Length: 207
Length: 218
Image (cartoon, chains in turn red, yellow):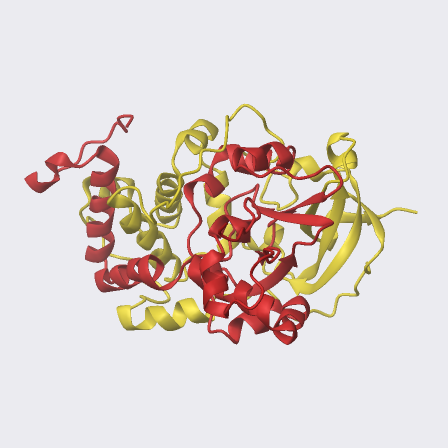
């Protein structure tokens, strides 16, 4: 970690912390001391995105779309309302659009300008989604990026990349794998991966 | 602005390194830094467009070499110092030296679930006339504004087609600079990989763009 040129006065408990960790700790003390933040609110925020909001939410949406044509239709027409009916609403998911993969089209999401991502259904984005390589390359060479995720798209299938430049947030509905006929919604949800809902993966049934 | 954040189309940053079963955090300071950014946002001292613009205004090399939460931390400090919520000296020492400035709201723990669940929709009523409809052919304007914009460089001066009309939304180019929300029509525009990159594939990029970024083509 590069030295940031700052010196802090700290309790000796910080001796094993990196300069950045010390700096974040110092900022937290300052903002609590100034009364701008409630330290218990910080704990609630962290716990929310650690344990309550994550990609299992999105997997429920996908599994429902696979098993309930009425829900899939609702998702097509008004994804925000359809997703809210499963209890997933709010911050960074205020305006949702569901993108259905088909044999003709594979959808893939990026935010080239920052890291916009549908939090209520997928939680916080993985490091690679926020990384410079993904943000820079997804729009110019999506097929090469997909190969790095082990996904090869046939030439005849359109790869459609969605750059999240506004407050609209996208959720990819992957194709339901063959061999899962008769599976329950819960069983199907287990198969759905985060990457499949970003569009850097596909869903496969166990052999 | 043509800042370091406008990444689309760059090459040279290497492969996309992804990890299986990635944890939510990779270091103990990350959740604290993340929560501080969110909690300070909840004080109502700035809007989302001002927050994005602060990140874009970080020095380019600092932006590119920082991890995501590190970059957010630096941008938070920049905003708080600019608004006088903290001083540079306080930030360095981690101790209060001047009285706090009043903020609109301090989010208490019990308020967090409701705040997160309601979010902050960007749709706003407007009596502006809708200039484009689905199927219309447009060309994006060639602009290089000094301030905040959500028209990426790679999509400027390019032909595209309107595929979705989202209604009227807060216009970031105005809202990031204290000029009001100025709601504008928002569209999803489809660009072919051929028009964007000269590639002979059937691939496409769809981008959400506000009406002031677009002009009609005959």
